[in-house]
Every structure is written in structure tokens, then in C-alpha cells.
Image (cartoon, rainbow, N blue to C red; front, side, top):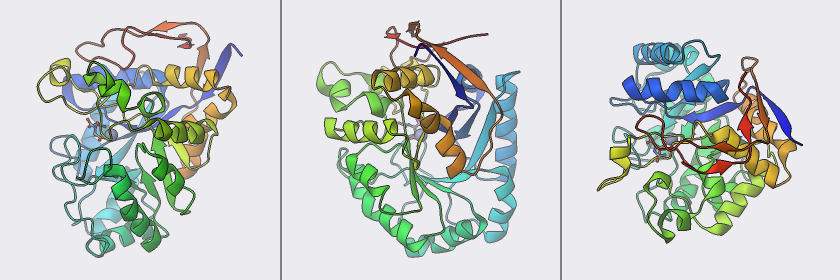
Length: 335
Ligand code: NCD
Ligand code: ZN
């Protein structure tokens, strides 16, 4: 096959930032995707209806005439009242929980993962049908953080069977296995975790632009992620976790975590599914599964890709994308 048309591609985990950065990156997502789940980890985080409405408007203003729907999220706080959650529900697609301090702009997150502490909020979310997106990492040894979070996911899943829980950007074989153990657990997978392992980041010369949280793991982990994504497994959806940082925050002492993939994600995924003879499952992975999991009907938008090389730009303004300067076998047909 030399051409493929994807119906309403969705990016179910996306950082668009704010101000000048937002103006640079939002149009790039809007070019490839029909909608995106917008992460709330601004400084300060998105915690009120006013914040959501204003941020959504700033996103819409930045994408100008492209057809792209920002699906907003709220930053999880354990002190939201039922009344507030009932009110905020119509403005959001999910609530994002960050353990405090585990990643960029997460210090206002939850410091105690005790389910009794969280019960009231999780019960309210279950009742109101608000999905919970989770950054599942502890503060343990960097390669074990996600695996150490598994018992916490299990407690969440068992105790709140009516809560839809999305394990964001999974990176391990363990997390893939967990998907089949609980009906209410789902997952997003990024582009970078399907392509790289820790070797690509730190095995040779250090590659700061591939450094993100959770860090890419072992070969067997990547294999597990690849096989579940390529199979079009109904509980797995694409979430880029595209997380732009300016070059001076990446190429410096104390590199910020985050890989910028928004402009290349769809081309990279198509290339990957094609080289693995799995193009027939791409539509499920980049759109259909997410529509079912989130009960979401996207705008009708078709993106055509063709098997012609795309040379990834070295930078988009002051941001370096994944695969900068490399060639991807598939490109988007621009009309
Ligand atoms: C994200 C960011 O920069 O906002 N960074 C990352 O490494 N993925 C935050 C996150 O999703 O962890
Ligand atoms: Zn993220």
C-alpha cells in the first residue's frame, strides 16, 4: 500500500504549553490531528472552570482556521467538592493525576497515594463518569518507577470499578500485562516509546531530546508495547505526550524531561505500522479505540499519507523535534 487515509486521528495526551510556545506548537498538532487531550500542567496548573475556558480559547486562537478540537483536562486536586466536579464536568474530558514532583510542573500534584485519602474524589468521579488519567510513577529508582506504581493502579482499579482509569504513556511489559487484568484500566502509548529504549538515550552519546518521563526502558518492554499497539488492542490508544521545551532547556545542565513529537507523530506511526505490516490496525490505534474509551465522536477530518520520504526539520522555531534531520518513509499529503 502506498497511500492511507486516516479518519479523525486523535492525540490522547498532548502538552501545548502557553504563550509563544503555544502559538508555535498548536498549529503543528492541528495539522495532523482532529483533536487532542490537552494536559493541564501549566504554571500554575489548570484547576478552575475559568482556567479551562480561557486556556481553551487561547488554544483555539492559536490554531486559527484548522479543524482541531482541544479536549480539556483538569489538574487533579484532592479537595475538589462534588458540586464543583458536577459543574466542571461539561468543560472537560478527564482529570489528570500527577504524583507530586515526578515530572515537569507536577509539584502541585498528589503527595499521598493512599486510596482512603482519595476515595471521596474518586467516588465522585466514578458517579459523574469523569475518566481519571494517571502519570503512574513513584519516586523510586528511575527504571523501576512505573513497575512500582503497578500495585497502586491495581488498588485504584479494584476499589473503583466504575472509574475509567487511563495509565498514561506506559513504558513497560508489566503495564501492558496489567491491561488485561482489570476491565476499567486503559492505556496511552507515545511514539518515542515504540521506537527507542534507554540505549538510544544514554547508551552512546547522551541524547537530551529523547529524554522524557517515564524514561524509555528495556528491549523487552519496547517489544511488549509494540506488539500491543500494532495489534490494535481495544484498550490502547495513541497519546503522543508531545512535550516541547525550548532548546536552551534541553541542551543544558539539567535537561528538562519531554520529547517533542507533535509534527512527526502521525508520519512516524504510519512508517512504523507499515514496516511491521500492521497498517490495517493504525486507524484503531490512532482514533477508533480512543473514541470508544472516551465515548467521543470526533470532527470529521481525513488525513492522507503517502509513501514518500519526509525529511524532519532540524527545529521548529526554538524546539527540536524527535528524528530531527532524519528521513521518515511516509509523509502527509498537504492539500
Ligand atoms: C511532560 C512535560 O514536559 O510536561 N514531560 C515528559 O517528560 N513527558 C510531563 C509528563 O507528561 O510527564
Ligand atoms: Zn505528558
